[in-house]
Image (cartoon, rainbow, N blue to C red; front, side, top):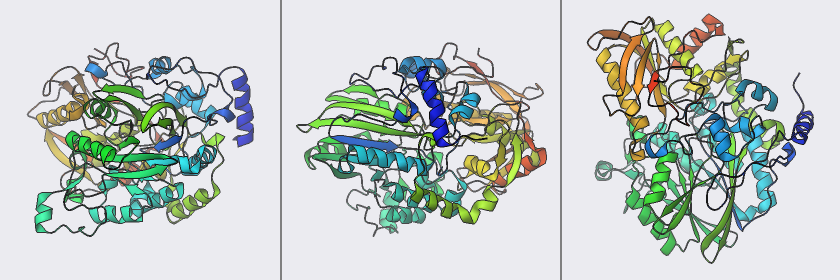
Length: 608
């Protein structure tokens, strides 16, 4: 029998008395790892002492998760070269030690994969927009409605069945109800361009992207959205680059940085008029403009670069006080402080799926940031009463689709592990997708993209169509079956590996390795492109011949549209047939170059 919220808090109060439940950590101005956490009762988890004169609230990468969910953090998040052994590339015990978090605590469960199944049963689900709204209203009420600003880092309008079927409109309405002041985007751009413009117009906050431009050809031949208020013909920017907000007595500039590689990582055919990129020089000019022309007291960037890219940008672009980052789904309890030629920049990342809410308090005096406090708050649905208005909105949104979403497809193996996605090389739900593609299409090998979004299903829990849509709801879900040579398969793996493990963050596009079914391989993390992937073998041990052709099934092609059915139909067919979702073989590579890396622990494959 499930516990009531009152019973849960009482139970957790006993744990707190035993010193098992710490509060969130503050970070010092130096950015050093915080000291050991101080135990707090769960009902005190969201109590934050007043500080400063501006409070910035941030969430990112919610991926349209309106309801509370389970979400397992990765045990593989490898960092190489200068990023080896540093945040965000820390997992498990090394993460806890670095950030001073008590093992076995509610925060240890929020921030790591450790003892996930048992901890999830103890602490319950996370996120949910009704619970998120309750927390946001509490923070704004206690710290001053006119002294707080709510920012959304993007990847909000995509990631669920209702978002797909409403073309993101469900999330625009939810964010309006949440009271989002400013946002930027990434998966927002995977709808048709006219749908993006319509959603931006319906969004009550400011949609800002300093790095999205209208290409020259569209300007010359007639840009169809020339009347859109965010378009600037002289700069060719498709959207407003920044927003100026008066927060109490402080003038805050919020600059948007959309995902730079959107037309590469996602279909350009949906957004043919727009170009993206990192554009450091344009960012520097924008920072200088808001400092000098707009007289901003502090400059904030809401970024969808990914944390490694943000850390490099913070070194190269001066004058930014804080970067609130997203894209790589890293839940980081304390900001990293980056020194640059004019001072320092704080770099944060606030996880995903509505699981965390970043809260930064700033002391701004004499037009300058003097000091700060930061807490990344885990959003536990058992500790927060759901907001009734948001609850009603969500129920109305889901009602037309409820029967389809709640279809019971299978049971997650009660004797197995959770079905999850996160991890550089594979996830158990990814394996289910790969197995489905092979079984339904009678293929030797399957490929599935290394998306980082997707919720978690506990062992013994019913797998519903809702869960399948959480893993697959893209606007390009079509499957394919084709013949590929062994050499072609190697090229795919090499290309994705270079994107993920390139030592230059600006050449990384985020995401994880393509997931595989029916084959294994060895990867040398420190080798150069073309030389990382070795010893590719089918599941039966047969070496893959570079010149031989193999029947391969996959989905989510970025180029032209594939001819097959949506992948969720394929996965649903498979689950209805097997009835129990078991992982018969987990296709994980042998990894060379990861021994002792702080970003890998409890790896199910082999380390060389």
